[in-house]
Image (cartoon, rainbow, N blue to C red; front, top):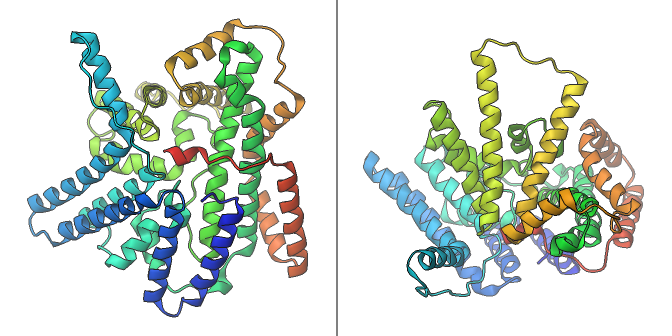
Length: 474
């Protein structure tokens, strides 16, 4: 069930009413929210309701096992068992085909063809997101950062439909206390909710959909038929498309949760205004970046075991982060590019510090250059992320340098959309904050009129149909 559809509007209207009516009876409210969330998930494919339930049982049972173990060894056994069970589920559904083909290719190259079973396994939508949430919950219990929640509370936490299929990755310490709290509908921030829903719809339905159909899909689908300028702006266009698509989904998810009285963590903070790759990952998919840092990079040793080990930890973290996004070597290459780039940046900063050099002056020209270089390096990574094979990625990069000619697809509207998609990230944060406050102070009639006008503009400008969100496949 996609957010910007009539189906979801009807579903949410029913859930919204039931949610607020059942607030005085917490147990009934929790069962209602679990039922609504499983219905939401089953709308895509009812057969995978069992997978979501299995994930809930594995992680809650694992957390209780950890909590009740009285020895360090027992606690370690419990947490390792729960994490391995999660990864086995994720590996079977997401990586079995990828590993089978990879092993078959290696064996074929070494000693002739040995057929391996290649099963057609459907990838359950959102499995990476709720798996990572379950893992973080068990590990946080192991670290004594949270107590195990009651079964019903944890079921609400893991299945809560606003974050279920494409994040953000919300931790137990962030959401579970809210599950236990009775909400007051008078405390809803209407101004922020209105801003988020229409910003999300505009980014997804107008910007992302248009730039995909106008230049990104045609060029990445047949790079050999396009010129250097078309390829260049298709790459820039994809950077805008994936940002508008994913941040648009996140805006809508945060808004939906907000209307139900819940607060989700921020997931994007103007990533294309970043001045380094490290800065980019503080701004892009923030909840995933924090997860990789806290549950992978730091447990590997972080920067505590010498410079060489630090670079290895950075690279391993980013390679696995790339593989998390998709079962393919192009995603691994994307992660590797970011890992190498971050390691080089870390090395440069370390050398300057070791040499006793003062920080470089924070001049306007330097900031512009840093942002330009970072954005273009990120766009280089997006080539591999979007391409369906290394051949496509290599052809894109080759023709970017050699295929000079006319640029039929680079229309003024395409240029304007790309410029707008990047430019909005340089708008000061106080501007939308002021707009939200001003909207909340308007009379209800004026608020309704403005919302109707905004919705009409979005539906008029948006292409026909609603494309799935890009991050559903992860």
